[in-house]
Amino acid sequence: MSASKLDAVYRSILLTKFFTKGWGKPENLRRLFEFRKVVSNREECFKLVERDYPVTITKFYWRRRNLMVKPLLKEAGIGGIILENPFYGLRKPIDQIRSSLHNVSDIFVMGGCLILESLVLFHWCERNGLGPLGVTGLSMGGHMASLAATNWPKPLVLVPCLSWSTASAVFLQGVMAHSINWDLLEDQYLSDGEYREKLSKMVTIVDEAFLAGKKFARTYSQNMEKNVQTATQTKTSDNVGNNNNKNLDITYKENKNESENTEKVIDVTKTVLDSNKIVKNANRTELENQIENLNEELKKLLEECKINQALYEKLISNKKFELDPQDIEDINKLTENKLKEMLLKCKVELRNEETLLSETLTHTKESNDTTKQRNMGTSNITADNTNVPILKAPEKNELIPEADKSKSWNITDFTSDIWANLPFFKPSGKKIDIGKIHWRDREALQFMRGIMDECTHLSNFSVPFDTSLIIAVCAQHDAYVPRDDVGTLEEIWPGAEVRYVDAGHVSAYLLHQSLFRSCIIEAFERSKKRWKDGKHIN
Image (cartoon, rainbow, N blue to C red; front, top):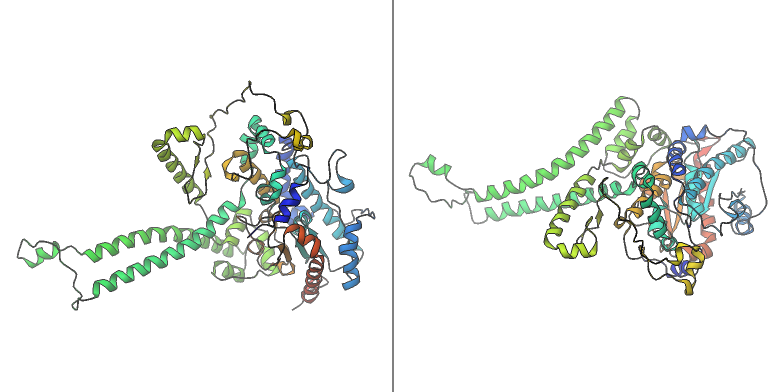
């Protein structure tokens, strides 16, 4: 996927920076991680908001009213309520510039608030006899709309535009990554043990296991086919020119006794085939163990009546399937780990093996090129020309080098990020150049990936009630919201539909509003055909 140059240019001319005050207080982050576990459970979250919670309505949002709400009302008779995100517009702190959040933790506060506020509005619509209901948003609003849809226990139209499955790629891989003071975040992370010793252990990078599972399933089948083909070719070549199908005897026959001679015969073909068989069986055993464990889990759930027979057959099959509303309800009642295992259809436990391999490669590299390793300062990083670098976690007793006290003061140490961006105040160098390194290369970047996935990845939340009412619209060349190395919406929400527009993030927002509206109208038409008064139409 080629990234839009317009997106990169547009972001580069903006002087505003994100997270200029750092991560946020460790205590606040810890509480947010705990709160995420509550709001990600539909039943628990639904209890937090009373049905008759009051609603306050204001009249602003000129752009959204005229580009989205009014045209929908005119074209399809669809009314709209515009909910302003926390930390946006009139709801932002006084000293916040535009939508540039001060702390990383602010984005998680925003998501939690919007989920609960959406429930308030859904209840208000129901009390006033309005429906069917739906939710949409653009860019950050699209992702917030997706989070809001996970906790409504009834059919709900969802049309997220220009968003994806997690916010981690936005801030680590997209053009937004260049608007973050990574040196400040790394300094805070390394200087406060709360982040490194406690908070880092509370988060999980979601897509690491997911992508490893996909790669394992894909490469295993290919390797198996190659092994079978090689074995077949070996058998065929062995039989050519040998009418009696006898193996070649290359042993010097010292005795005349036939039985003794037979024992001394070396079966070359059999030896080759047996060695292939050993390798093949080793790989097969690994896969069989994973599939067997998964099938046992699913069978156990079936016997406990936690899933029905139809869902069980879907999950153990190798074919693409669509989840019914009842299937989704059954899955959402299970624990997070089991939910992931079933949807991914593969139990992945290869991470420890990768880490072990990386450590072995590191020791080998150190013994061969000690001087180069010391100069580069990458003793904890192992990589070659083909594999992705894997960062080895530092030991608990490893000392963090203190900052050089003789180092001269940098302008960013005592000025705001806006001043630091002016040409005549440009700093001479950065410790972290996000454009030249991968997020796995620095521990602070790994922490950012982990907390973003923990609090924004859609796989950590309940599956919407009816995924067939979801139509996501994405920009094919989106440089703000990259889709590489993260799980897709179709994989996280089976039955959801994703459509692409041939544009970047900025150009899609400016030129394709009519497409967004048409998808919203189509999704509501689907809802009318499938549901009536909350009941499914056969």
